[in-house]
Length: 128
Image (cartoon, rainbow, N blue to C red; front, side):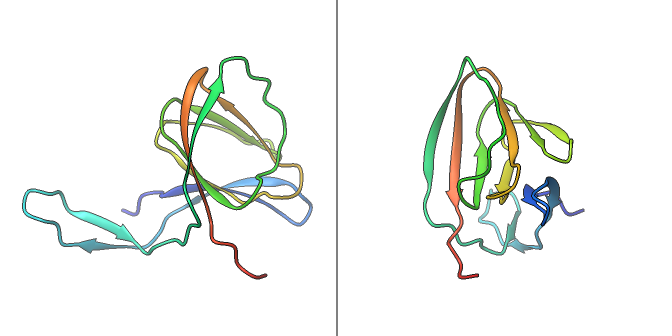
């Protein structure tokens, strides 16, 4: 069974955003004695890491596009994301989302109230 590694948010040519569940190929890596078996994907090139604390006490979620292509890792609390095709998902802590809807209508993000920790991992820019 291949697990879902991340949820992708992308925009089509009309600017509508959508979800996609993405599973990566993995290889089994020999583990050290006393360490559980490791299923390792091929590497993904990221540019840097940003450690963010979201002050999600009084939120007014609104539509926005991703500022760049990046992985967003929700370290604690749930997050509810709605894409413009109408689908909404409530995702648990630990979920990894690749946001690629850098244009179009975007998406809405609502965090569980409180201080929420998030890790941002922008992808290495590629020439298109």
